[in-house]
Structures are given as C-alpha cells and as structure tokens.
Length: 312
Image 1 (tube, rainbow, N blue to C red):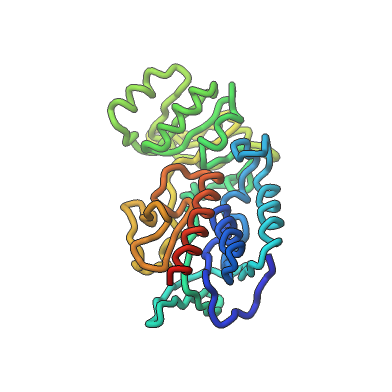
Image 2 (spheres, helix red, strand yellow):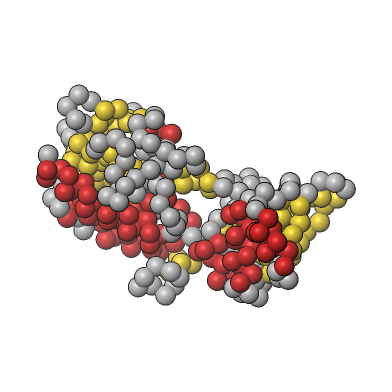
C-alpha cells in the first residue's frame, strides 16, 4: 500500500479509515480494477491497540499490531494508495455525482464513491495508567478479551447495560468481576436481578476510578468512595471500561442517516441513505463490533461499490 502525497484527479472510490473494514474494502475495490485511495490518521484503527486476538479465523492467537502488520502487507500487493496521517473533516457532494473530501491537513480528494470505515472511539476514563496499559489488561471489549481472565479478579467500569453484560459474560467464563460505577446502575430489573444472583459478581456503586496500576500488566485499580471520600486500591488483573463509544461520523455533516448512537445506518449492501456513500465496520449500526465482522463488512462494501460503479 503505497503512501501518497499528491492526489490524482479523481478516484473511483475513496475509503475513509484504515482499520480492518477500510483495508479489506480497499483490497476488494482494487481487485475489481477500481482506482482506490485510503485516507486515515493511522493504519490499523482500534485493532492496533489489541493485546492478543484469539477469534480471528485462521489465527489461534495473534497480537493486534501483528495482525495489522499482516493487513498492511497484504493490501500492499494491490494498487491502493494511502494518505496516512490525515484526518477527514468534510465530505461535499458535487453536481457531477462526485464527492470532494477535505482533510484537516489541507488535502482535497475527489472520488466517484466514498466508503466510511472510521470505526468507533471508546469513551475513556482519562486516568493515569489507562493508556499505558491498553492491551495489557485494560480493555474496551469484553467479547474480545474476557477469555484471558478465567479465574481472575477484574474490574468492570460503567453504569449501563454494556457494563452489566460484560460483568455477566466475564462471570460465565470464570472470572470474578467487580462492577463499579460512580452512580446507580441504569439497567433493566431483570439484568439487575441476574447480577445480584451471580455469586462471582460484586457490585460497587458510588466509587470513582482514580487510576490503573501496573507496569507490564494491570495489577490494581485505585478508587475513591464518593460518600466517605476515602481511597483504596483493589487488586485486579484486568480493567474493562464499558462507558460507551462514539461513532466517528462528525465529518459526514448530516449527509447520511444515523441512529441514536451516531452509528451510520446501512442496508445489506452497506449502502447509506446518500447515493454513492457506503459504510462498513464499527461505525455502522450492524450487530457485533469485532475485527472479523468489520473485515467482512469491508469486503461487502467493496463488492457493492464495484457493482454499482459498473451500473453507472
């Protein structure tokens, strides 16, 4: 995947985002003979943060950076150019059924179609140790990482359904989750009853996370009791942060229809509500935010773009 500095007049397809969805879409578009460009802040997306991935078909265990490296190597075999280190801030339709895509760095790219594959950015706690220990015990995805913590004490941070689901999933796999929130849990009565019945789950409300401790791996979480204003450190091997995520769609400027979570609504062809704009991966309203699902949606979007451009 060649690094580009100067854009050509017009591309058949411009892909915004270079995670599993964007890179797979790029490969499928290029294989159909489409002139293809990718623009992204960095190659890999959230997959690059993962410690060990065990649910990507064909790999029993692979680190996120290693998998992303293989993605980049694979896509490099095709005629795909990449404007890396650039962030898109606007997509503007033109009268000749094209799109002008503007980056914050001042590049203007013209394309006949656009695939949005920008993923989601998890809400972070912004506490000491969080960034340094991502992939070393800090996780934003229980589905991805719960299996690594069988028999371990772990913290789950969040007040809502995703945090409750993560705690129950961790417990089912044999971990001992401590579900903590600064305020009362906002979950359905049936979910709350399931949490209270589960002997492995401990619920602690009225606590604020102050920091995550550890060097090469998580060893503890420092919290403050908001009622007594006392601090303590709990010994845990993992911290699952389940406080929500934000779909990276601000740059679409209302061109495409989104749901209440800000996710782009797509049909079975990954087409959005705006003709010529497609979306794939975690940024969409599709079920399951997983590397393998994102890659599959990227393939689907790439095939759909090729078919639709031929019809034009």
